[in-house]
Image (cartoon, rainbow, N blue to C red; front, side):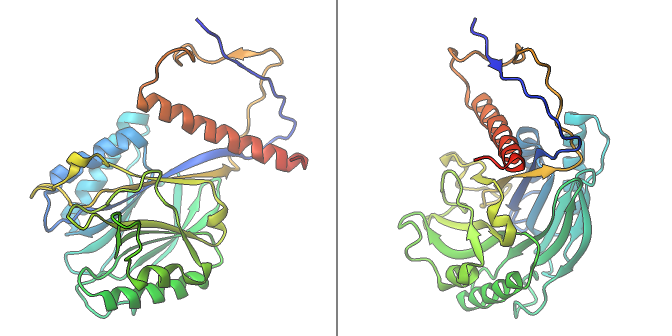
Length: 328
């Protein structure tokens, strides 16, 4: 069996930041057209597969849905970590039965402030975008915004996009924006026929769409539209961040009365964790754990993805070391 060896490093700087990862999910649950426990089961599965610390939900019906999601996520986290942490929430107050909900891990994130951005839409049936100032424990502060723009009126979406663009330009912190925007970005023509609101949202190079590794329609239907997006602005545009569409297999559609017609999005953000100290590695070479497969074996997709994730974290760590030493 082939052995893999790691080159040894001696870390000379106490307290040097280590690369860490924040997994973020956006999911329009369409609570008026889905069933709470079915969605809860999906959320549990997504947590099991991706250990998501920050969730943004759109179209949440009421506090019963909020409690269900918190309970499902907290139990899934406890099964994985045995930490006994109850996730916390910021629940929007506007939108009637189409509210916005953010659920987060308090061991990893602290809420500094939150607000709903009133004045960006003209119908009370639409939720005001929900903005939260987060502080990552040991990491950076950032602004997190979730939105669900008007479902039916292009003019209202365009108006809201212009307002969000102005809001982002006023921020000094890194900005992460996600949600359902409905700009008619069709996979049929690679977005060529999209609405003007998309370009008004990102206009002036204010926001960048973090394109998923595989672009598929995020809402079921013949239009094959990408209606759900993740954007970054300010210093967040320099962060190592990757996105993907979850449940991207064709058999996710059509949806039923139990499920949402929207596919969730996942963002993996790599950042420097000042609370983590890089370990001192012994002078002798060390082998990787026996549980990892050798290079001559065929890897299943989940194992391959986990190895690629570890490689990304190691590369980010090496980049930080090189920057500290002033070498290319």
